[in-house]
Amino acid sequence: MLTKQQLSHFRQLLESELAEIQAQIDGWRRDIGDPDYGEAAGVDDLGDESTRIFQKESELENIHRAQGRLRQIEHALERLDNGVYGVSEVSGQPIPVERLEAIPWTTVLVGETLPEP
Image 1 (cartoon, rainbow, N blue to C red):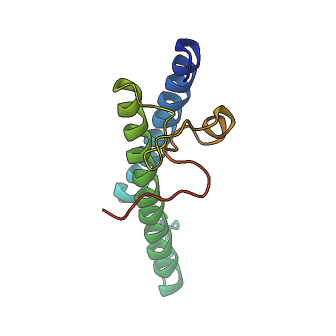
Image 2 (tube, rainbow, N blue to C red):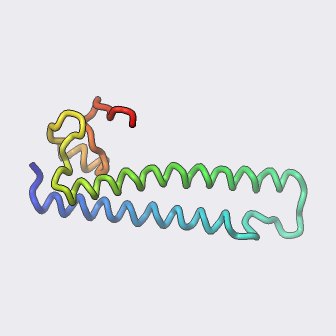
Image 3 (spheres, one colour):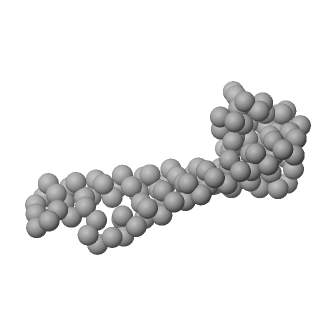
């Protein structure tokens, strides 16, 4: 069982990570939405266009991965609110503090996997 101080610490970690990831996503979205994004000054050949397309696809993939992490962090914060943070969703066993320090949004013990939805 985690102490109130530990729970507060993990809430701060999760909220900080959430804000950082959201800022990254916002930056990627601005880049993709910017009409001048990736435009070379006066140069408009197929190579430049290919590079711009690749960069946008790469940033879209980054956004997708980051949104997945956001969902994990939001779920961990919900678990904090519900009083079950730090307990495995699979076995019901406590998750070691060292694991929570490394991956504060984890909901399982090492070697456990959640069933597919």
